[in-house]
Amino acid sequence: MGVRKAKHGWIYTIFFSLLSIAWVFPIILVLINSFKKKVYISRKPFTIPTDKMFVKWDNYVNGMEKIHFFDAFKNSLFITVLSVAAIILCTSMCAWYISRVKSKFSSGMYYLCLFSMIVPFQMVMFTLSKLANMLHLSSPVGIILVYLGFGAGLAVFMFCGFVRSIPLEIEEAAMIDGCTPIQTFFQIVFPILKPTCITVAILQAMWIWNDYLLPYLVLDIKRWKTIPIAIQYLKGGYGSVDMGAMMAMLVLAIIPIIVFYMACQKHIIEGVVAGAVKG
Image (cartoon, rainbow, N blue to C red; front, side, top):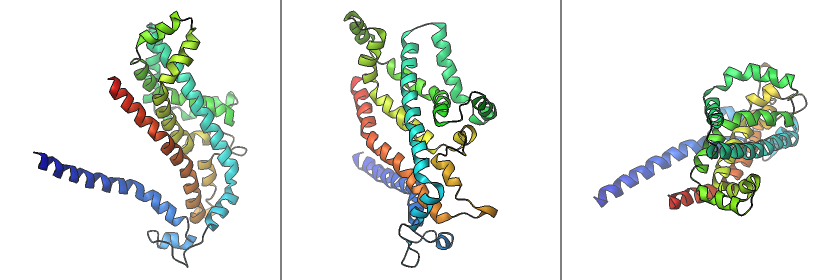
């Protein structure tokens, strides 16, 4: 029986190793082609750049100059960080209220958040862009409110599931010691929510950082461009594309979110292990 399990274990290992290579291969391909001359990217996309193909850092320098990369990076960073912070703060408090206050109003809020996860963005994008324009939300600060609305559904759902697993006696003890509801939340409940906060932060940051359609519809792109929008400006007339610069800018766009995920991954694992021990 043990030998059979060992054989199956090797099969699973080989299968998932091949599957992981299939997922990582496109990223490696983009990285390789970011160091090639434009003509060789279309001719020999799968080959390692040799002396005549290799352009060193020229594609990166050229792309950064063309799209004003650092301006787009600052806009993307500002929008992503503040949007994620707003989502975590507001939705965690909302989930705590929904989980602890049993009423028709709180139940209605919960189901409204679930319903927002079902509605496709394409159904509301026209009215959303019109409303954002009427409310003068076409700025990096204004779009944070839009992201808060769209990200609230999933975040509230995740926070509610975790809050309901927290023993109510902990909060009652804090109340007896003289804590107000606000103090109880920020001093007792919110620190316990750290694993879920990090999970929500990763999911929302990956979405907001890579989002193209929502900023394109809401932002005044003549004044503010995020990285996905700025990269599209590498397309020239009649369908011409500076593929070398585009590959280089895609690599620079991927790096921050990968670094953020790798830095936070251990906290997610710690949270899963802690939850398993409590269970």
